[in-house]
Image 1 (cartoon, rainbow, N blue to C red):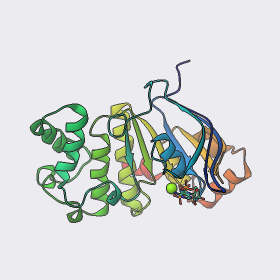
Image 2: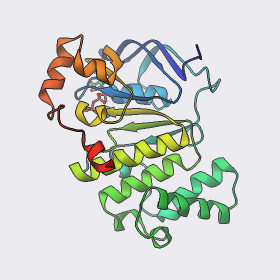
Image 3: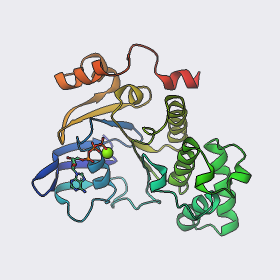
Image 4: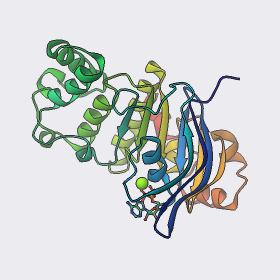
Length: 260
Ligand SMILES: Nc1ncnc2c1ncn2[C@@H]1O[C@H](COP(=O)(O)OP(=O)(O)OP(=O)(O)O)[C@@H](O)[C@H]1O
Ligand SMILES: [Mg+2]
């Protein structure tokens, strides 16, 4: 069997007395789309930050995270892209869209500015930003929330990272834009062969396009499995309640409706 892309063993993260993650074991398979599902405070972002070496200094960390395929902890931008809920977190308000996307490509792909700009413009087209050439010269505040998130995605994948982390990347968007962004992510991840960690509190949204689901509750990973088996026969009562509390999972997922 090929080694996992990432192997998390006995990972605990504490903030003083508060345990944000408790003895997490989790393998991320190369090329898979894995969703982390859980309510607010369950430790989802803490896991993402631990994987990205982005935990704040005051976090007390125990356990191990290994990267057998890369052979080293992934470098931001080059080995992994991170998409946040609020693209304001990752986009610089005083730089043009073009500068920001091109900068990532220039730094990690060793392109000169001209090549990096050409690459950035092509990416803006791929994330379906209308009129990529003029969007290159726009500033973040001139775009809608959905368009800004498309730019954030373009910047996250600009250096063709092997791994993409999306932490509630669509939660701030309305349902239709949310479905479009998920469809976009789905396509990009497939085309580039990326491994995706898709973090959300919305099990219905995730189940439309990921391969596996890991359910987190109070800092623990309580259940993991392929989407179909988790949805059809959840082991934990908590998971069953989560499924019951969300949008009707028997209707075709939005992602399928957008794609068709
Ligand atoms: N920097 C921090 N300092 C102190 N406590 C923190 C910090 N970051 C997270 N926590 C605590 O760790 C726990 C897990 O938080 P985390 O942000 O990982 O949850 P989450 O599942 O991402 O929630 P949400 O869905 O609201 O984003 C929470 O109880 C939170 O208060
Ligand atoms: Mg979070």
